[in-house]
Image 1 (cartoon, helix red, strand yellow):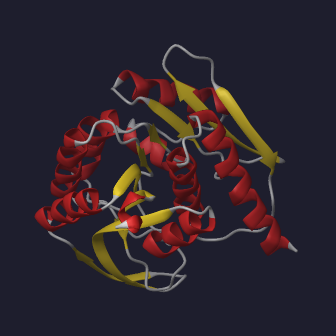
Image 2 (tube, one colour):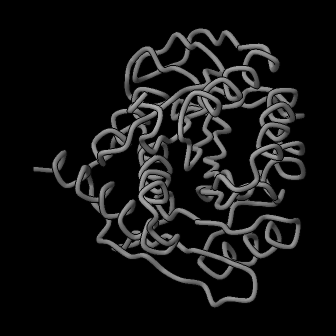
Length: 252
């Protein structure tokens, strides 16, 4: 009985057989910050670090049932959402979030793999934007995902990224963390946007090292810090610092 009283992050995501991203990266990250996880598996994938060979999607009902069981079994204090695959699954996840409005959700809008394989069906982007994003405490798109969600051409500078982010806020998003990993320049800057507040920048040196799963890691770390009752701004700052430290280790 003691276990169910401990704070948990409910992770809603797909598996990655290579271990580089998805559920494996989420669990690893959240556990490293001293928080327990429970799961709703949205898809099983067959992939290496270079390519995705197969995707086997869970039914929307199965995903929703997993979420409800996890929420019933544990003290879920934050939710991290990754790969959803289909519009029907997006809608099913949104329905469960509406049943649990007090639990903050972090959405990493996983649209494609690093190798370019689509991980969200085209018709699901609109459902994510209109049905799911407004229910989430924070959405964490990179510049490519941001452009697809707007939709628009990829922003070429910070001002353009902020304009696109403001469009998503206008469409109902509560807050956005625009990730700067796909930008250029000596600094990697993530921008936190919230309605009626000035943009807040989180800045680190840009490193030559790269690794898969940094988006999963960042969103999971933010969720874990929220689960520890830290404010959003502090959770984002500490999440970004964790990713930076991991990249530093790879560059040594």
